[in-house]
Length: 270
Image (cartoon, rainbow, N blue to C red; front, side, top):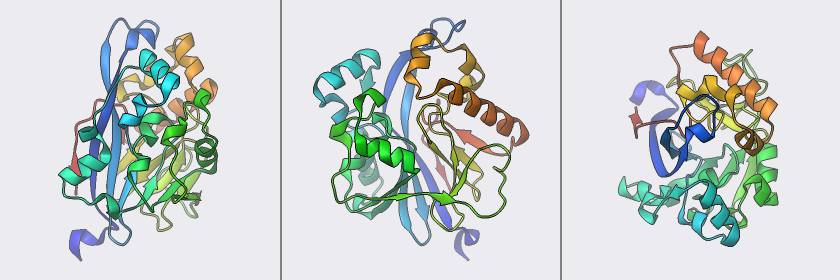
């Protein structure tokens, strides 16, 4: 069978805009380091379900939410233009945006939901808490109303995975995201309530969303400064999730863990 009989036939990573921050303002004892944090979008090519996205990156809507946008960009300088959006990036790769029928959402912050309105007729998949947070559109939780999908977007909450997985014993809740075991989800609460990470067993790839801002920063979570702590939905849960990931990374070096804002290169896995 083509591609070894895999359910997923390819995975492509895209950088869809980015922000810039000084890590010395985020972590104690780090020193001044201005770093670019890309907004990651993952294209998953599924044998039967077609093209699927994990998150949707930034879009120019980040500049078009009046005072909220001004404050966001003052604190978190963002760079994105139309050609950086996931819809434009897909077209450049000769992938029709209308072929996207499922979008998996890690959480509802603007660097993850910015591109949702660029698609139509898809099903949005996440944890129930993330879907509820998106629907409520609270700017104090960094959910911008001008990015919330129009009414034609259907929503579906993930369901628990029945069976044993390599994730067992590390994360509190494991989900069967697509219903066929090809994409497993895990709860990564802290940065956002019930944030959804995903694991692709066939590729040994784990996408940990904003559980941390980069692999080299995972051990620095406990050194966060006051303001950075306040940005998290639940700082204690954030630290606990980081500890869970540290154990997982130590025990399973064969698995590649990718963070949404890590120093990643655009890569295609097949």
